[in-house]
Amino acid sequence: MAKYKVELTGVNTNDLKVIPQEKQRELFEKMQKGDTHAKEELINGNLKLVLSVLKRYRHHNTNLDDLFQVGVMGLIKAIDHFDLSYNLKLSTYAIPLISGEVRRYIRDNQSSLRVSRGIKDLAYQILGYKEEYLQLHGVEPTMEQIAKHLNISIYQISNALDSLKEPVSIFEPIYNDGGEPIFLADQLADDKEQNENRDQMILLKKSLMKLKEREKNVLLDRYIMGKTQMEIAENLNISQAQVSRIEKSAIRNMKRLMK
Image (spheres, rainbow, N blue to C red):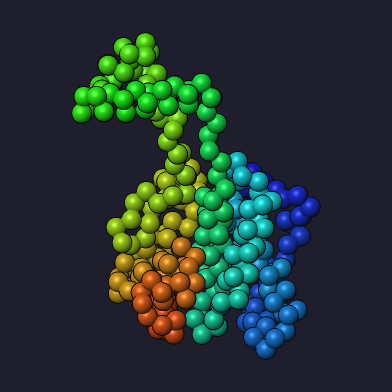
């Protein structure tokens, strides 16, 4: 199990405590009455949820300490919006939010690949020649014509033009038919990670697909995309209260379908 451990600077992950389910309910009731210490205890008692998400990114080149802080923000968001009436475990509600925050951070901060200045200069020469040729002849030049004019190979042309393209983030959706988006990272995950909680994920996806279209989309927006109820309400042109009712109905139906 040691190879799955997430190492964080200044944090002994072995010392992180886990709060029993009964105790969590008690703390949520106190928090809802304004007890800030109860909220702090809930956060500290669920940090291992953040670690469980970070295991997936332990080989990523993003700093794990930064991802941990982002994940904690997702955990706090989950605790702030958790409703005891859902009759769900906090982990079921929080992990998608934590994962969404981490994915968004990586997507927004992923650095572009470094390309040499010479290759980019060549790319601009190619584009300049293509534009000039188009103006003179009304059509774009072929690869062979460009290669002959600039005295370079077709491979060099392709390589130079590719240098101007933005790299694809492995956390960008590669497929979405109106249901749950599929991320490139999901397709690249190693076999061990794919098998974790596989049965539970299959059941979850099957249940999700049986929901009414609006309920399904609200759940995906809330717990996969990390949108607020107000953002969803604006997109659907309905009130925030209506979104809240749809969300609660969807969660009740998901629980029923997963029994």
